[in-house]
Amino acid sequence: LTVTGGSTGLLDGRGRSWWWSDKFNRYGDIYKAPTALVVMNCTDVELSQFSSKNSPQMHISVSQSSKVHLTQLTTTAPWDSPNTDGVHIDRSQDVRVTRSTMGTGGECVSIGPGSRFVTVDGIVCGPGRAVSVGSLGRKGATESVEYIDVKNVQFINTSSGATIKTWQGGKGYARSISFTDINFTNVDRPVVINQFYADPYHVPNMGAVAVSNITYTNLKGTSRYRTAVEFYCSESGSCTNTHVNSVAITFPYGRAEALCQNAQGDTSGYVYPKIPCLR
Image 1: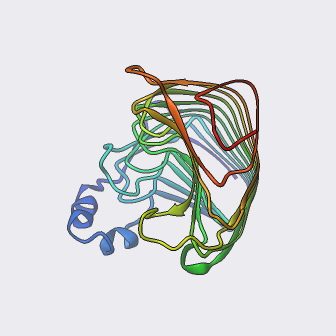
Image 2: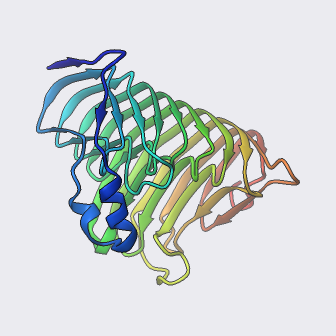
């Protein structure tokens, strides 16, 4: 199936009434809100030149599908619109998201449980949150993600950037994930591994979804805050084989820093800020 849009067409979800509901009831109606376009139980799909505005929730969802190519997308929503991810992927494999511009209140691209062999290439992201893997392992669930390749992404004025997030108490794995040729402009939290999603201060330090074989190569740009790299890993030793190569993320008003807790791995080439718990 091939679906090709055009330069003038636009799908307007008119989502503001849903977002307003969410402001009063965060666990209410927004989670029943419609997604603008859903690709489910499909094989061999190409969607190109598609524009979506103000979706009530996610703009595009790919679920339980394979061999899906999304290209030349434009998704827009206000920075404070909740859960308006540009593209969400779960339980799917062989998915590519390329040559697209996304500015939303959620993730530009979120890669959820059961995703394998996903490529995100040539994305301009901002405003919004991140290109994120997860969250995984909520309520003790066993979930997995593997073989994820994120490259040639520009993050502009986003709240996060290259992100992996898991819940405490979960099981499974997030492995073989690479972030390559990434540029950050005034990003709140450019690089994040967080095994304490969603609240790092009020959860026990227990087992977590294993995060391994994570590679960061040629990351550069500016952080809005002093902390440019955050690796928050569980004491269970479930963050291993983290490789950081050629990173230069600066803080315009002083010295940038990295926070590193229980991550294992190494650095090579020029890496700034220095990541204290990696070799």
